[in-house]
Length: 510
Image 1: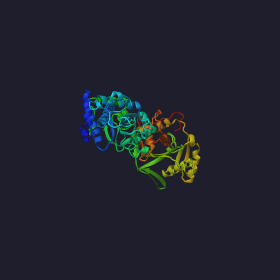
Image 2: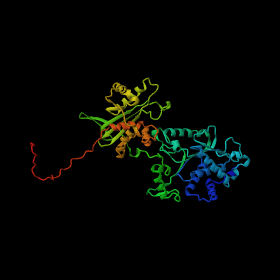
Image 3: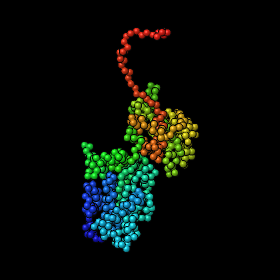
Image 4: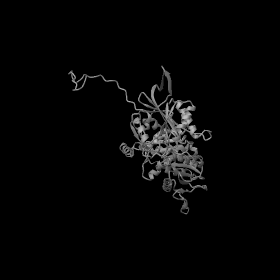
């Protein structure tokens, strides 16, 4: 095809407009915005794109037209559509086939009847100048085998859904599979993600989640177009993306029917958990600052951000603490947590330490952990530590006392056996404090897995990830004493009983 012929071909917006005219449809404003954006990105050098649009925006229909337009522009292109499952991917392929068959600019791409075997449900090949091994468009589920394929365009259509993002393990598996795209895509190829977030730890997040070890967003460097169902101006006035279909009344019905979290993720496109979490992370305060210890007039004083500390509790929930690379499973983290109670009536979660061991260390795994706990107690001026003796913790108190003696740390070890279920312990420890916004966490705690555990935990057991950090903090909170608020003695009122003399009952000696 000559360069002159290439220049005469329609842009994507014109291609969409002609299709809608053929189907007696009006092109809504947000479709025009999407079409022009996709066309502009493909014309430029930035061909890695993320399109997020609210549920019901018609983005899948537009993406189908985009795939057909890509083949109209260059029939030699090879397209791969990836979806959460094969059924969804095949739906996209069927849609593109229908467009090619009916659109006036692509009818010539449909192969003749004698070659109809190349016009299948999960893949098809258009009439093209080159003889290529791969089909023009292929459908694949994210769990399928795509090794050995090559593609000029990869469309990831709704690869993130609840069943691929509902737990840390599923999210890690999804990221591993999507990383394979780099081996399939030809240099300079087009990569387009289309979807809505289904988790706070979404692949579509625009900021790294440092508490899970992310140094940069998964789709870092991708051009982004985000179209929520409405935006709010500085005055709070809402501007709806598609007011003819999604006006204020309709949107409010959706919010009421689906709940605030799901509405926020699917309609406003902000990464949150679809399910309502029990522990409201928004009520957990945050602070910076270090403990300050000093002695004055023979008395020790410990302050934090200028607030005097009145109590401290430390809890160790032990486990084997094996590295994840050695087959660690959810629930096997060994965690020690320190909580301080201030005279202001608030509680300060100052540190949450996830212990790790070195297989090459000459000390045993238990000895390594005890040494770390001893250093933890000393560094934070902690007078004692409660060790949960259920399971492997039964033999640790003795080893920990030896480690404290060796390190010359004057802290006591309290053996603690938990008899209630973990869910009940966590629920009771956090409920009232979060409701009253009396619990704060140090900035360092926000960079640990504890935040993820708190964000996703639910008492009904739907969360299948780690929760040992939550359990350790709940244990420390349960050891903190309850403090009544101080109140001044009220002024005594006049005695309403009058001034009559007091008469003692018979037999009383006054």
